[in-house]
Image (cartoon, rainbow over all chains, first blue to last red; front, side):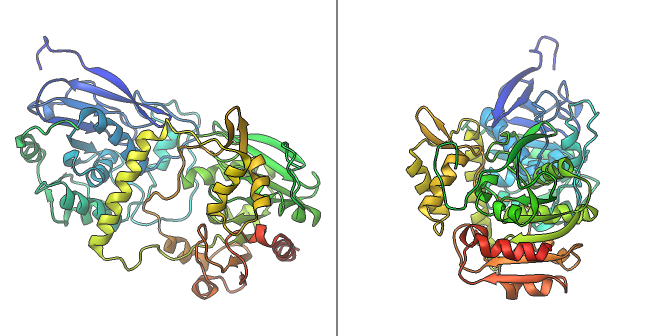
Length: 229
Length: 302
């Protein structure tokens, strides 16, 4: 990016009672890339070096309770609600390749399964919140946040999304949907070292490949730009 | 009598109402019975509200209990929230419990309220003395034998419907109607409850706007949805349930029912737990048979 190009900008999207901050890190023509941060993180301020060579616009979404998005009262987070956040972003950006870190990787997988025509490849990377809780619930627990913590990030998100259950067969059902319905040969690329149970199951699915980030980006960048919805 | 002047035989509005702050979400709390009586928590099910206990709670109060119930977030007169989850309901329930006292107390829960409060009991066994579950015991996995590709198709349409609806959720409003129209609408989900009872419920669970009555429940909530949760998980823990347990089941299958049978449940129950199955009742056992169920609960708590 040269100094003459536009500065990153942000728009607010509505998801039920939450305003979501969608950042345009780099505007332009070509295939869109949408970055999803990890648990407790926020969107980067500029295009990270890893994506400098991406041939199209680069967006980044702050999940509910994170970054520039609303911090709601009283918690109640689920991964499925964050999938709804991504859906609001996709409705704005049109079809996009998702790159998720940690929690964002899990949400990218859910989105790829739920919106197979809009998600033009999901790249799963290491980051905070990749594991989630576990494959099945542990001892019943009432997640209580540090109520003195300064938000964002929402302390409710930190405790609730650290224990959300991620059964491997639930995760694979999203991977299968992406494979069956996206029309992509390889809708999911796994670029993580950490492999929690859900991800170990996903990586064995048809249409899912473990690879380096550059390879995944090259595959999805090579696809011609899809028309906007 | 409700504020709108509609009555139902035996129904009594709470003696006291108050609000508690559940980490920023205002929760409406209701009490029947003497202030100094021993407290008991009474939890309603999904898409209900504490006023649905107006017939049942007074019977427990007359049995000597201070009956404390509350509208779950998004329901009745509690605040509408931005987010809803099982964990949030659990935490809200704990806030209500803390507002009542720290001595162990019994809990009576219907439907989802039974499920949420059983988990509260497992997480805080020292806070609960006994538990009566009214047709809210975990049932069977909904799609046990569906072929894999069928499940994929099913999930695909569920997911896209759900996401489409989430995009509209912030703009939705409950449809206004006359008192009778609202009673009729609710009757579709509660076909075994009398029209007079449903009319009575409208005057509590709905508000009268200039253009008609509207249910108070948050329009951004809806039936169905999906997620990773499976009833097997709660079932497997049931044998170790930490306090005496009474499970009342309504055996007549209906829209809101869970279809749990004694034969299905028995192998999972603690040895001293009691199952009472009502052959002639649907899901709302405490509304169809208030006296019978109140007597069962009072005997269990005595």
